[in-house]
Length: 270
Image 1 (cartoon, rainbow, N blue to C red):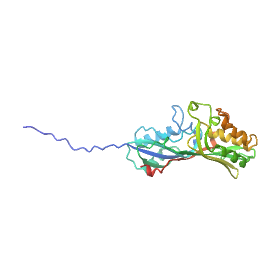
Image 2 (cartoon, helix red, strand yellow):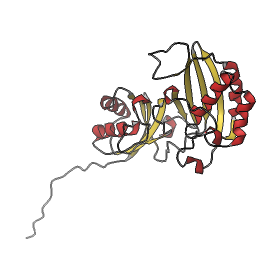
Image 3 (cartoon, rainbow, N blue to C red):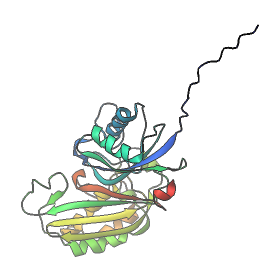
Image 4 (cartoon, helix red, strand yellow):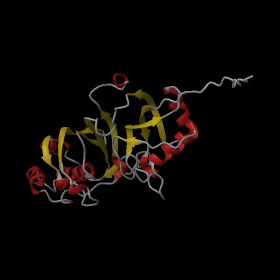
């Protein structure tokens, strides 16, 4: 007689790997930039620690724009793969529970596997804020750079129009790192300087930016605003193509990544 042993029925859950996109807001004052570093506090490091606490898995995230030390964000986008079946809202509330107070997940979306957060972005929007005041502001210290002299915003705005279009921005880039071994050509879609009371704001939209490009650009525009550089001299910087020529490079505190743009909404990327 042959005995047939029937094992108990066991439901085996099928793990499905999906990709998520998160929109982040953060105060970058206390961080050494977005990108993970072994011995430094970074935005990426905090996001990945929170993800491990929430899902129980080590997860690597990728950002649309690797903000530098001290730079802020209102609309940073990161993406990652996960086996977790948690709904999108659980990622928002769960990650915010584990994250420090100066980093927040604003929204989460499940997106198609082919979504590439960096290469598929068509533009990035940044703002640089200057407190144009004779007196300091403790409330704005972390989010604006103070310039004492009265700025000619009209002259700055006029000069900034030369940035629009496809140009070689080598003169406006830092000479730090290996980025300058690659192309220094970028396309700027919009650039403007405006005043809102004591606040002077430089808004710029481009397909991508070189290292310290925005902070060096606004540094040169401030020279225009203080009548220390002419509009012609500012425009000439574009043609010189010498790394580190523009500036001075203003502090990171005034710079904020406002938004990352894609060809369609996250809902359409499911």
